[in-house]
Image (cartoon, rainbow, N blue to C red; front, side):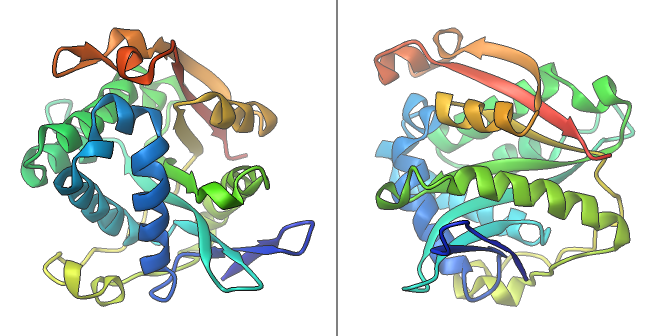
Length: 256
């Protein structure tokens, strides 16, 4: 499903599909794992096995049917991606959320586990379910663009389209992905039951200034701001590995 064509006519924003899934993983591998701040802070950028485990997280999330890609129209290449996750509040406070379960059960590497646990920790501290009194959200989980296609507003377009997609879910699924669509590397994954909850907000963890600018432009409300100097992996703060002080923001927008 096509959501929009960029103003310059060079890119189309589309729902993730079996055809575009391999290209989306390439963007995550070449761009997100190498350049994203938490990936550097937890040394995912130096650990290929950890990266493979996080690609499996992307595959799992793809089954929600709410992820998007940007495609260069002249080449058909996937150049940017937003892997989005439907998050559902757990009725039992002792029940662990999706990210914590994935980290415990499917991550063997300290790097991949640390990255997911960081996401879960911030989501837990800034509890948007309680803040907005809701039971379901769409989370923009991993957002990335190939280096040679940056500064084209693709991240903003993907986030804007993610908001519109989340709004349309009240009328039923807008796109579907099956385990078969993910290819042979992920054929072992269990089939996903359709999600019937409807998100009331779109949320994200903006981990660098460019994504924070996207959030501000799209009127996301910042619920929490934290310094990467407060988080440590293998004896070093994330800020030390980044070589500068960087902040992350947990933010959300109502889907009215």
